[in-house]
Image 1: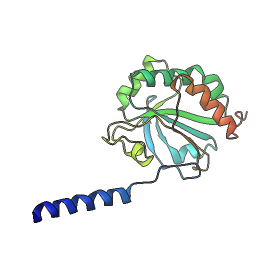
Image 2: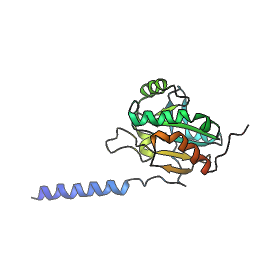
Image 3: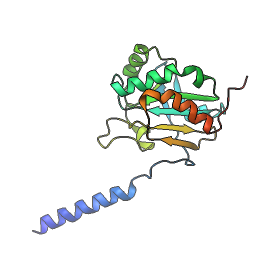
Image 4: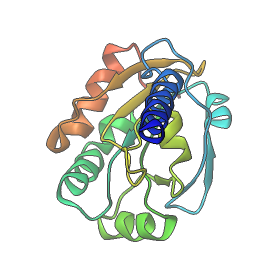
Length: 180
């Protein structure tokens, strides 16, 4: 009986400790966690380096390459590339798939922007979007200002219109046309 009581109390303690240490969800105004991720274009992207361009940065996370919703989302961003490239922002999609898979996915869709890879899930975890199993990121888009602060967090992504939605949101956030 004492063994069960000790095990039960230990479990309660472990669970409550885990809950107390759980990170609060990121929100507008929070500092975006830095990242260094390899892109499907072979380049490595680091948030702190991107900030030096004085552009807004958009990272649209998706769960898995080569799946229906993720394909629609990436295609929508490609279809709206003229609007997105006309704004003073750098934009990416990202997933916990490895670089090889994301590269094949980007090539299969002829994407004109890079997909970032976070195969160990550390960045997705830092952003609070790694699923409980630690196997995939949630479908969440982060809008980051040139100062590294989050401008907006979109947890209600519509895959079919996401490219247009990003362009609209950037304009709402005051991100203007690219400077010549």
